[in-house]
Amino acid sequence: MNGAELSPWIALPAAALLVLGGLLGLLGALGLLRLSDFYARIHAPTLANTLGAGCVLIASILVSSAIAERPVVHEVLITLCVILSSPVTAMLLMRAAVYRDR
Amino acid sequence: MRRLTGRILLPLALLVAWVLLNDTLSFGQVLLGALFAMLISLAIRRLRPLAAQPRRLHLLFGLIWHVLMDVIRSNIAVAGVILGATKRQPNVGFIRIPLDMRDPHGLAMLAVILTATPGTVWTDLSPDTNELTLHVLDLKDEAGWVRLIKDRYERPLMEIFE
Amino acid sequence: MNAILDWAIHFATLCFALSMVFGTVRLIIGPAAPDRVLALDAVYINGMLGALVLGIRFGTTVYFDIALLIGLFGFVGATAMAKFLLRGEVIEP
Image (cartoon, rainbow over all chains, first blue to last red; front, side, top):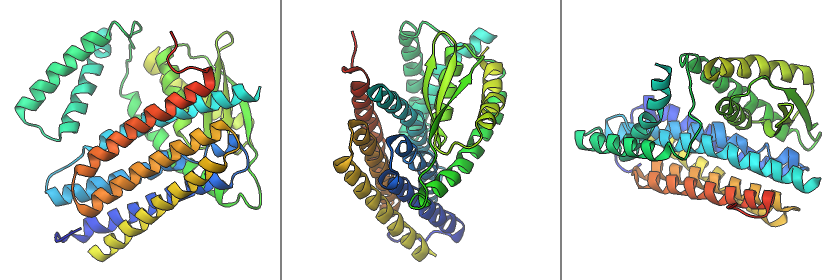
C-alpha cells in the first residue's frame, strides 16, 4: 500500500473481507487443534478452503483492480483451483481414515 | 446440439483459463489460447472415453446460487461448533442416502459440492446399490439431511446430466 | 481510509500466520497419519492465502503467481500422500 490512495468504496469492503477471511482461516486452524476426533477434525479446514479463500480473493480482486485502474480478475483462477482441488484431498483422506480404522 | 455443447465446453474453459492466467485480452494471446485449447481438447479426448452430455445449462446458475448460500450458512454453523467445542464435542456420524443418479459426471459434481460444503464429507458410494455414505459433523436430523440432498442437489444435477 | 485497510492487512497476515502455527502443532502431535496429512493440507492453504494478503499489501501481482504455484503443488503433494495412505502406492499400474 505504498503511495496510492484508494477510495473508501474500495478500501472499506476490502478491509472487512480481509478481516473476515483471516478470522475464518484462524477458526479453521483452531478447529483442527481443538476437536477431539479425526472425523470431526476433517471438517474444520473447509472453513478456510471455501469462504475464507473466497473473501481474501474478492478483496484481492478489489484492491488490484483499483490499483491497476482496470478489472483484474485473474484471482478467479485460484478460487476455481482451490474449490475444485480441496474436496478431492478431503475425500481421499476420509476414505483412507475409514479404511485404516476398519 | 447436445453433442455440440458437450464438445465445446472444455476448449472454452481452457481458453478462459489461458486468458485469465495471462491477464490480457490482446488478439495474439487469445489466438494462441484458442489454438492451445483446441489442441489440448483433441489430445484429451482419448484419455476421457466418457464425454459429458450436459443440457439445460441455465439450471446450473440456480444450483450455484443454492450452493453459495448453503456454503455461507454451514460456514456459520461449523464456526459455532468449533467455538463451542470446549463445552460440547460435536455429535459426528455417518448417514446413508440411496441415490437415483447414475451419471458419473453428475455424481462427481455432487461429490465436490457436498465435500466443499463445510460440515459434510462424501465418504463412499457402494457400486451395486448406489447408496451414498456421507459423514456429517453435527448430526441431528437424519431424515432432514436426506431430503435436503435429494431435493436441492440431486434433482437439478439429474436434470442437467441425464 | 487506507489506515483501516492497512490495519486489516496486518490483522489478516497475523491470522494466517497463527493458523499455520496451529496447523504445524497438529502436524507434530497428530496421533495418526491422516491427521498429519490433513494438517499439511491446512498449512499450505493458509500459506497460500497469506501470500495473497502480502500481494495486496505490496500492490504487485508477483504474489499471485506464488499463490497459484503453492496451491497447485500443495494439492499434488497432499493428494499423493492421501492416496498413499489409502492404497499403499500413488500411481497404480
